[in-house]
Length: 124
Image (cartoon, rainbow, N blue to C red; front, side):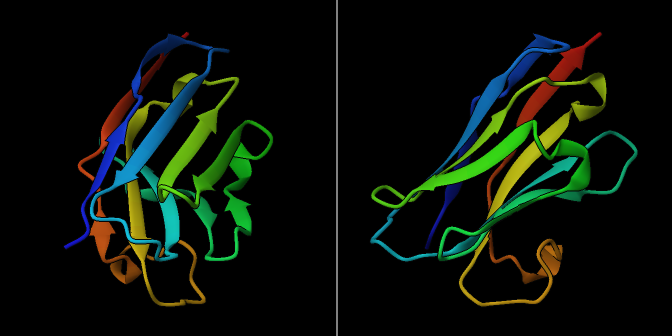
């Protein structure tokens, strides 16, 4: 059973940077469709960034140019580099992965594997 574990969250001031990591247990070289989601208090979970099995990426419009998703194919570790953080980026961040193609990038029900989340807090 694949397990995901996020790390790298924390508290920063606006304009700061963080890099989130998502490690994959029992990784044996499979390529997953992977994504980062976030959920702020009293808000719905939303997709932030996506990377497909060939390394093609998509980012939600509000983070384009500030956030970058990437993956180390040797270890399977997923990353989210977050620069120029804003208070509205405050949320719990989750990584997720699935084996199958979907025409939806960030439909939560398509994702099989989820991490436990890591908190990001940005103060003004």
